[in-house]
Image (cartoon, rainbow, N blue to C red):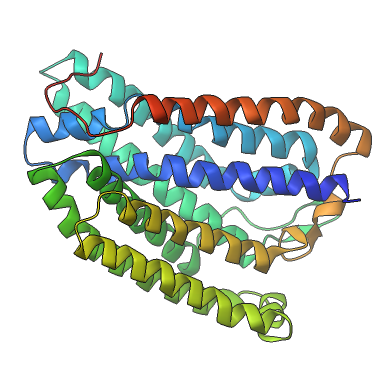
Length: 333
């Protein structure tokens, strides 16, 4: 029988991954927003995510709330260590959400809300990447509390991962628009996707090379058996996903580039999980140590077993209802 704490670690990891791949492409739309060549293109870009963007963030709430409920020690360590990037990310998401609604209600202030939509999207993506980089490089813990400094999260490595996430989200946004649009806007995004795919793969390579040197445990895990087998398999899987992405773009496919870009994110997430396990806060706070008492884990699990399938069902239904290409003549209300 699996330990409850590890079951919950899998649930939190699933929620975070689902948030990244779902909210990633709509943040990517915001990052690409200034490239729109007309108001018609801007409306089409926003309409492509209008029915689903706020539902995507359900998974962020679930991941953060779940961490607080079932891994309180991890929450108590991570929050002080990452206060600044997390606060900036949340403020950016708020500005972005407000801009999404308000730009349709005004002409005079539309450029301001367009800038807020772009700025909120790129700031949220950048701060998510910085938080990821800070977590990968390790958080100093002493006496079950954060023992580092206020600016420990800001390093060359975390800035690198921040830029990598921005480029990766832009790739997701471009491939989503390839899937959802047609005509000149689709052609524009096909061109952008080539460059963004190359940039994303370059960042994956650099971050993957640097990660084992962030902590000796990572190095041992990847370059000693059986981890060294994964050091061959994971790059092979990434190359296969990259081949699928570029071949889909070359063939003018609608869905293949988006699914291939998503698979790159899934593979990167799996790689991070391999590096972290069995820690939840590297380098030294394990999943079991950070977990709440078993009674609390069991109580929360009952509700989650009901809630997660419901969220998955209504998410899938929303995507099914709004499947197909976007009609540029239809407005968002």
